[in-house]
Image (cartoon, rainbow, N blue to C red; front, side, top):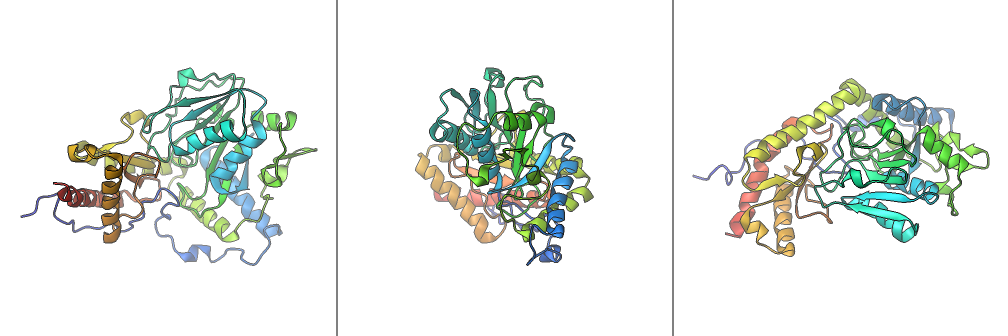
Length: 390
């Protein structure tokens, strides 16, 4: 008789999409959700502007963003939003950058190698950990990622960021927004993209600015030339239209319609509290399984720092850890390939720069029942690959 690990499970997830971006569509989604999209219409028409502005107003309301913040839709996903801010704001004050996974490391590299800021410090942590915030100088501008999409580690809501500070806090929140409570009073710039927690389509970013960030942009022009796609100000001040739906470039009205569908669904499940509860339930389901597993552990060892969206697992079995990096990468890919061929878990490999292992998205559009259903499949696929190394 096969044991529990080697017997192929009989229950399959209803939705096998556990990718960390683009992420699963909301439950019940179909192409019919896009039937009213303004295809063939100008995004600058009265109706087009209204749809874009509706994305902004609904997003602000769901997130509980302060009334005096502004929010705009910008090109090139979260990457575009972050780069706009780095190039537009940084350079007039010293900078601290928190780097603890792939994307935060990218921002650090851009600041050092591309912007070539002379007074920039990089505070690093290994995958699964977060940097020591006590080492940050909050008189400097600070660039941080709230949730490590590729490391499964996040900052807690009560992160030791002072509300009174001289520098600006620039926060990449792309896999945190709509799944985690963000302390707006401790932040000055927040960015995210549509294709994460609400399962939207790619290529559009969101950029939120506090009054302090707006004041910096207006009073202290960027110490460098900026291409049009990065410009947030003109000789008259902040380009207000960006924050009312007058986008810098042409957005996809299909994607806009899809974003509105996701926002309306978010409202239907209880807004931010409901979204957070769904994501935390997903993390709890995996945590219960992980506690009993003899081969898998969270990449983030501290529960306080454990992401509820980008849930990253490392393989701790002795046969696996005895392999060199290339061998571990190959074995982990074999597990991922088996899951994909069975059609039970798609796109669940760890990010290319992260330690070899698994990564399952646990955002609000993923049903907890599907995560529970996939867990025995993880055991099964692991057992098949383990058998090849026995």
